[in-house]
Length: 277
Image 1 (cartoon, rainbow, N blue to C red):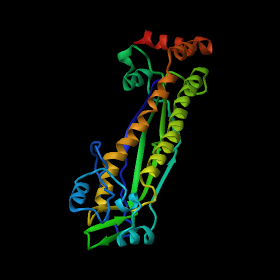
Image 2 (image 1 turned 30 degrees about the vertical axis):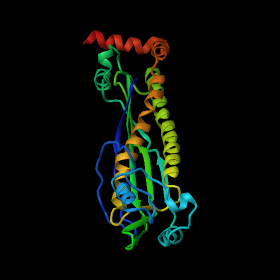
Image 3 (image 1 turned 180 degrees about the horizontal axis):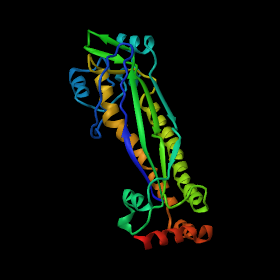
Image 4 (image 1 turned 180 degrees about the vertical axis):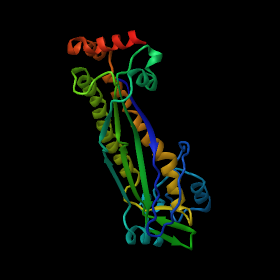
């Protein structure tokens, strides 16, 4: 009754006001966030450092309590606030009773552990993002500001539950195996709720209703890079944390219990099939 999940990133970049359609490909985790938030009154050296991948900072004049520059006033008072929206959804499940347990065992990798897989739950963690936001230019400094709109959707692909074809639908053995796999299904759904909260909190902390600043012509590409190199790996890792809950379902005690239920019908069916092979 092993469960299986793999990560799938569905990257969708949609056009928005003052943005262009562009693609996004996979990448390694970046050491720093690439979208720099710098003061428009910063020195040339500070701007160069920020443009080359410096960690995000608060505009110097705001952080120090000094008066805002005219460009900061325009950015912070006239363009829409930063928005990050995250939603999740479930896609239901279907049951497949066409494959024998030895095929399910091979697919799950249980054969290497000398275990039989009677049922298997398969799904994929998915994420999609839409980026946009209004951009203002400042020719005097060569910088621009953007109020990012980050809309992220998380979900699991439609769940497919396999039950070995040795077990007839409606029988006691079939029902016990299906109920076990439905526990795996519920663990995935619980994990989705957890991932949504973790990612939403992190997004809101990162994009905290302030414009972001970058050299002219680079704000959107820097935002895309951050999503690709930081946020997608972060989301993938959060989905993967659900494996621990899945493992708690497949315990020796659970397998022992299933071997005894239905007057030992599951064990008897397996023994009968093995004797035919």
